[in-house]
Length: 95
Image 1 (cartoon, rainbow, N blue to C red):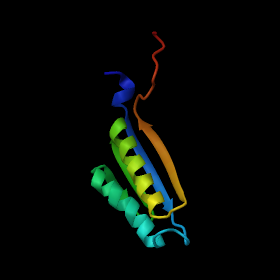
Image 2 (cartoon, helix red, strand yellow; image 1 turned 90 degrees about the vertical axis):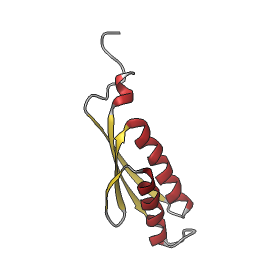
Image 3 (cartoon, helix red, strand yellow; image 1 turned 180 degrees about the vertical axis):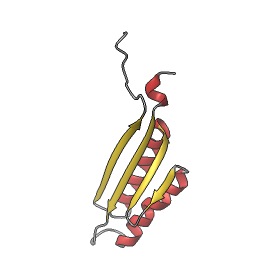
Image 4 (cartoon, rainbow, N blue to C red; image 1 turned 60 degrees about the horizontal axis):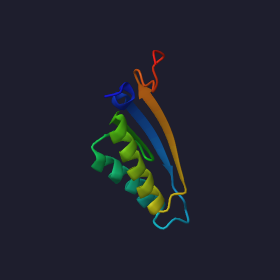
């Protein structure tokens, strides 16, 4: 398996609720938190911030679900910060 598939990722995301969203601002952040919790990758969360960490593919899949849940609930902004842990190079200099 290539090294870039094994890279661990941490994702911090913040939902900025919208006052004119489909659901209330609180429901918008709760939708994100619920999707993150269901992924099993959520480690910490604050009022509008959630941290996911794990294997690259799992984190990216969970991130998409959390963003979808937030947007579906009416949030207009989801801020995302992604950090690769360790060696996450996609290409080797030896090739």
